[in-house]
Length: 272
Image 1 (tube, rainbow, N blue to C red):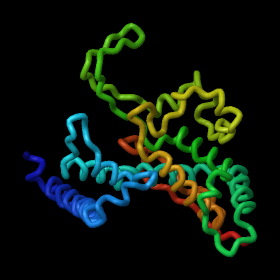
Image 2 (spheres, rainbow, N blue to C red; image 1 turned 45 degrees about the horizontal axis):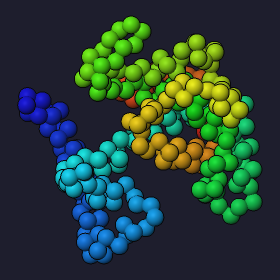
Image 3 (cartoon, one colour; image 1 turned 180 degrees about the horizontal axis):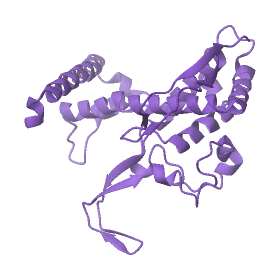
């Protein structure tokens, strides 16, 4: 209660109210469409996320309340903003510091886009950006946009002889996992070859978990990967990027990996 009465609390509530206004409008407009069409759009083969929320029923036939739907929509709309921005920033930073990898990415992008009227990345292009994907994944391993996550145990669990009771909150240190020398050789080195398709086949499913893993993993991970590859392809199609030698980047570990002093880069427009 005290927090909500403080200056920061009032400012936070103001921003939350704005976010809720956006999500409320999205939900109400979709509810109106479904009401006017008699749920005809729901007969399509694949329903979108909002349609699933609006039509979901439990075993007793009870649906989600408006507030519950809104909470899910808020999460889907805004949860990936900071994490995606962090992953993009660290990938650009990593490639700026390794011009040999950057050049290889640009060759891959140019091979796809050369001869076209525009530099728009299509859906079919995304699967062809294999080396760019390797560079993105290695940046997420080394710099880890989400350093840790929390989970609530639904049952008692024993790990290495230590028993954790049901309802315990467990923090999973993704950053430490992604730098574990028993899993990653030369773990502080940026090396996209770690994610070569042939090597991935032999990788443990839980060795690389930037989006978490299992049934509670990030619902938007595929969208995020496609979004980031599209943005990175456009950036490196257009620019050569190098580090600013006068800027020493210092990591700031929090809920989302940031820097304490920002990242400054030099950009020069490419001719192609």
